[in-house]
Amino acid sequence: DGLSGNVEVVVFSDLYAKTSELITSDRPVMVVGRTDKDERECKLIATDIVPLEEASKLKKKVKVRSAQIFLDSEALDKNGLQELKGILEENPGNSPVFIKIIYPDDRVFTLSTTEELKITTHGESVELIENFSAVTEVRVV
Image (cartoon, rainbow, N blue to C red):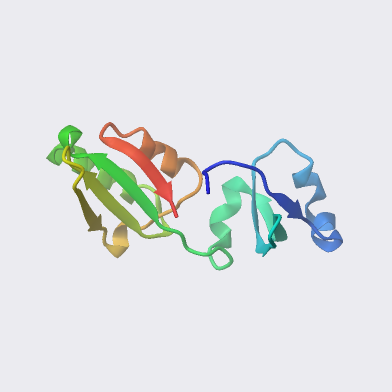
């Protein structure tokens, strides 16, 4: 429903034995797993846990998500698009990017980027895009 909240993560003993030092540290981690959902709750059953800076090594285990970048048409110009393209090129990954240009009358024009502009949707790449001047929102779906 929302973009924030909590979820219980279940880590079985074999994975815990391999990752306990990492789990109990203050380092950010990426948890890969499957969801276990019923009417009352949703849990993540962990299958792997790695430091966030090593998350790119999990490409084969992580479902590819897409990035939707919403841009304000009035704040956008050719130089801005070139700058955004540069950010995308500097953060390669497996996730397709859709650029949604929003006009004052609430029309939305959607652009699908090329294969060369796929990005990583974790780490600082999303933050760099969010800080781009014409961006109003970034969604990873």
